[in-house]
Image 1 (spheres, rainbow, N blue to C red):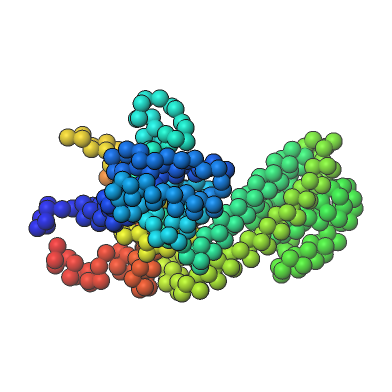
Image 2 (cartoon, rainbow, N blue to C red; image 1 turned 45 degrees about the vertical axis):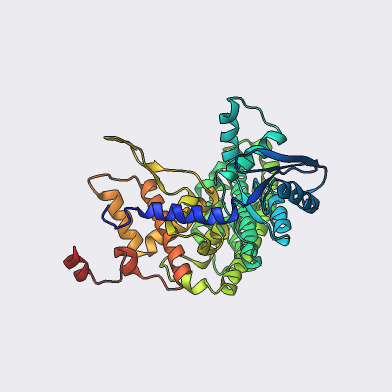
Length: 451
């Protein structure tokens, strides 16, 4: 190390994080650990050696725990403490309620990851015992050891974006499920239909023609065949116009008309299966409409936060893609460094070194999978439209030493995208391709001379 303090950047960031936690988990505060459940809440008051000062079971809902927090002040004062720090696991919605109750009383509030409690439970006595009483004490012990974290602050606008992002993910999952069901049904009763377009579910003409076949003629392919290609084309044009399109692909219509004569498939189930396909197409179309509306609302939230122009300054990143990422991360300003966002997403490299041994570096895979998924989706478009990401991808996949697979390179670019989002939002400065490439605003010649 060449810095005067002999501390690495990681040391400084870790020290700062511990200082923030120590301010909340003050040595002058007793720890009130609560194991949250539906109708039974186990509350323990401990000191910083996890010695139990008081314990009580409250038979109430989470939003009635104000009486428990008021009760906890007495044993804390009897133990010589001037205040309390409330701790719990982030269980469902209940931790949010508890956090609000603690804030109303001016009490510090922290959370302990359930995984930390589970690991501590196994290390406690090498058994798999699990009781509310033991878990509450373990939560207190993790808190006293500062193995806790400060939950995301409550903000109405960011909270709305998070809820809209959750709805968007559910709609996408439903649409993917419906596509898979339609494909499976057609493979069973009418496999020729899937061969009429290169990417059938992305073809407006293919979907419109399938709807005409399944809806108008109730899956009776012979009846549709009697219409003739010209009349089928007119019906498909009308369906596409009704859906907001302009003109169909005549090639796909002709291919589907020719497939009407194909006898492959389980013919006895064809009519019923095509009726089910028609119902799935209706659900899929409705979910597409809902998805468009939800994404429009998400972009509206970005406008309200005055972030649309900043995030779309990253070439290749759409407002919807950025909103999907931010719906999972929350306000990036709550992360002290860009690397902490990457760690939160599980996209940070995991090192394996001991003495002279260096193992293979892999991604941690921890954190929030939904952030990884949102960043991964956004990279598909950004990698092609963004010259910095395209060059980075080409470098990572073509270099001779430590060559990465396409998936690994894409994960590296997804991590870079998260870092860039963190930078532009925290600094309120548009994305600069030169800074993204070189990490500085200095000209390349200056960089070379300094090196």
